[in-house]
Image 1 (cartoon, rainbow, N blue to C red):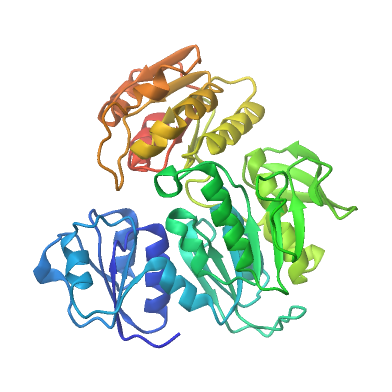
Image 2: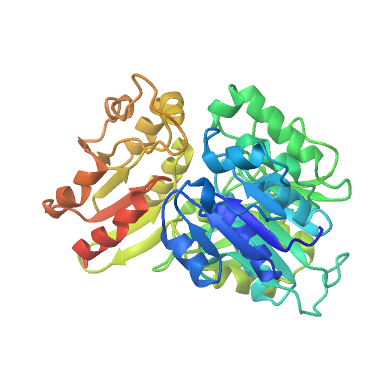
Length: 460
């Protein structure tokens, strides 16, 4: 990719945007960004030497940037975006820039409706931990490094067929068909579920998009894909492995697992050979499955069993992915980014297994009006796994309200014994007055995380 001296980001506080901003900053460019609101992430970017402003005022936008990067989440009427679209500027989508950055490198792209942040973070950590050259653009903050951007490029360690080349690990986002910009050597597909119907319209269109993504994989490459997905009969003729949590018909699966005080211990069958006693320091049965995907990629890369064991055992997870906030004699409090019914089902099922004798209280903030409208039945069914549900108002993100679409669409169908519908501004006081909390979970992709410190203070 050509060298840029000054790069401007519209929506720099986005998790995918900030990783690319950090890449350009690390490579010597002057980086400036705009975002709508100040967050812990934008504050960290400022500490790293990146200038960020928060007012959509024309006078603040630089006119001398040789690259302007934007995210599709920015509304069309945005003043800054309008300025760059109507001027003679080098304006590119985030996905286009990520595709250009990675195209001349050995790239591992992790796609899927859910799980991709944990899988990509785990693969990157296993490589980084074992001193292989690795650059990673992650969709979450990897707890081991407190960053969504990792870079190590001074190692002489060799991998079969790759040598000591710098391996790029990228999260391949299906939103807006962004992942079609990538040309990976290795890829993972964790799930092909119904989501982003505002973009795709139908499950058939989602399937077509994922099939198109698989066609982007290098002919000599490799694909690890979850067993029993809707697209599995339509995959290209490349080397591949089907993986699953416990389905013995898969090429790679878990043969035994045990819950431990800190997470899980488990064995993996890999094309008929059993590998024993992987230790994972984070909870959630779905994270065993995520580890199986990471294991599969690392085996194909040629890492040793000892290296993979060590990498998985030292992985501390990603922020807001089954993140344990409080664990004391009286309370457990876990925060999770789940925002799709299947993610919530796996998350709450894991909580039920780990804390079988405890009351599970789930606080959920729906994300997007369209997703609430399209998946209300699924949300209600998954949330009903909890003993108690506290449902908040919808976080709109990039969307305008849709008439008749409220959290009540979900609330009416929840079958848990106890359920409450409140606004997010009422949440902390509501919890302060509850005396029967045991295991509490905050769930959602909106701004529910900003209440985590206050809730933590209540429970400590």
